[in-house]
Image (tube, rainbow, N blue to C red; front, side, top):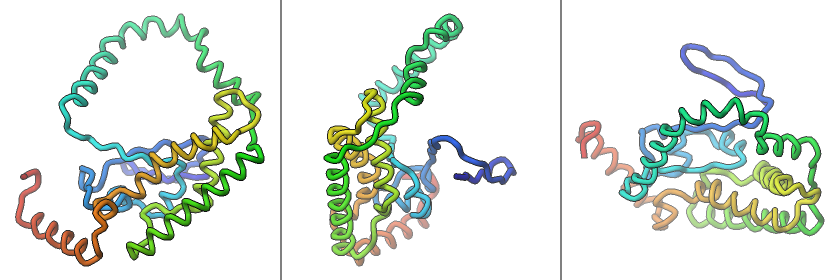
Length: 223
């Protein structure tokens, strides 16, 4: 496929022959829990549906979590000099790299009949839930669940089987793929205060108007 690049005055379209990992900040700089994932990510649904997994990573200010992150960053920098000296010696013994190369070259797993049936039933069930949610709330999901998502789950299932050097993707692999999909894309689709409080469209509109008025009266960065 192709990917568009617009950076530093350069606008071009490049061919994409590998997996694409994209990361971005919300339009307002911080994630707004009053808005849906689509409003926070600010991308069209046609673009969002092309990603296999969508993770929402929030910077929650908690003492214990901040301490763990700070400790990790300090350790990474402290061990950086040591690692740079041993990289050349250890490059020929990079077992993980050789393992990945072996998986790619010799392992091409396919879904078993039981896994295929489980995949079909789970996909239909998710679609049914999303239709019911759209009927109850009066609006479609921020991230549509389409055949592209089904293909993504198939790829995840086969990748999990490949990691174990298995020639067949079983029901266990499909189940784990759905777990990954549920804590990423499905969680993003359910995000937003509207989904948790079951707000009516009228109340949601009032909240949006109140937010607009508050922003007009307060300076940027004020609390």
